Image (cartoon, rainbow, N blue to C red; front, side, top):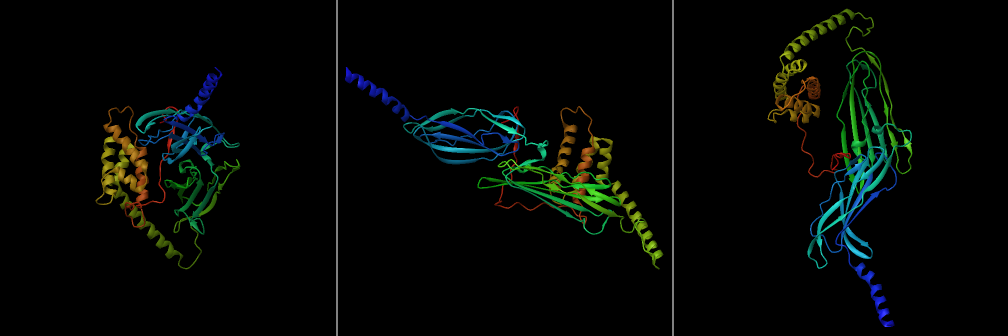
Amino acid sequence: MRAAAILLLLLLAGLPDARAQEAADFLLRLRVSPEGPVTVNQRVRVTLTAMTPVRFVDPPRWPDLAFTAGRAVVLPEADTVPGTERVGGQSYAALQRTYTLFPVSAGTLVLEAIDMTVRVGGSEGQPVTARSRTEAARLTARLPPNVDDVARLVVSPAFRLEVSTEGAGGELRVGQPVTRRVQMVAEDTSAMLLPPALWGEPEGVRVYPDPPALQDSTDRGVLRAERRDSVTYVPQQPGTVELPGFGVSWVDPRSGRLQTPQVPPVRLTVLPAAGTAQEVFAPHPGRWVSVALVLLALGASAWWLARRRARRASSPLARLAAACRRNDAHAAVTALYQWADARLPPGGERRVARLAAITGVPELAVAATALEAQLYGRAADTQWRGAELLTAARCVEWRLRDSSGGVARVAPLPPLNPVAATFTPRLTDPRWAR
């Protein structure tokens, strides 16, 4: 009897070991780094690890991250790394998928549970279908103290702000351009999260901003974001002008330290345009000859401008402007196509979208699409307004002007092996996140 009891105890003691030898067909693990509270716009890594004791028959179909609370920017590119893991003393073949996201609002960010189904090798090597599910993950995002505007916030371990101004040195006269350029470079963030430049609208100055240039790259897991903004100011009247400056809130997530790099304002003294009545001449014997020459030049300029206005009145752009001012959609679409055909290089595709791409004015394509939707859509509940289309067309005309009066040409093909790939993050929120 005693021997039977000992044998029963040995059998019961061996059951856990036997169960430990039976490994699950498929395990799924979700980890968030850093786990604790983070700063709004700080980089967060989400690592999803798929494990099986034998092998993966088919590559897993990795899901998109979805959120039930909070808002985040999720980069579309993710890294997948093979490896091995040990769980409960059992060895597993593992595939690790790392996502990058940035919380863009303060509060709790809830990452919903992930459910995956894969085909793996069974205990005898045969393919079997296995399924596993993670738990939901939570993350708290906070705004740094003394920061109210998230749009001006940069969270990065390394940030650089560079400013340059051209044309402001020496003597500046009415009509002469002044160009300002701002470059921002930051690590462990995305270019779309870098704040835009604030150029302002100084009185008596025309402002011509260029579209921003955004670039994201990665080197051994370290993200590098770059944003370049530029603007051209053209004074329209003499006097003192101040080109505005602006600041950026930069937080280092390692120390939590807040810094405010600044783009300083620039004060300019604008003189009258050369040859105008406001310019002061020193007395000299040939003054009247100079005055006569100036008047003759002004008369010739007035005659030339009158002829130019007459030619412009019948130009495609003038017809487009007239149709836009009248809010006449039918006349505007005809004038738009004629104007686009006149401005495109010979042999190119005769499309408004191509003209918008060549000049870097996407607003033209957006306004043209709205016009076509108004004319040819199934429903047109509102009256079409031509102000946006006319503004975009004038911006294109300004871009196409150069010293020779030529037309912009198509840029060369991109390099075959680019150093850094540009990708567009997607914005998610609880209602339509995928």
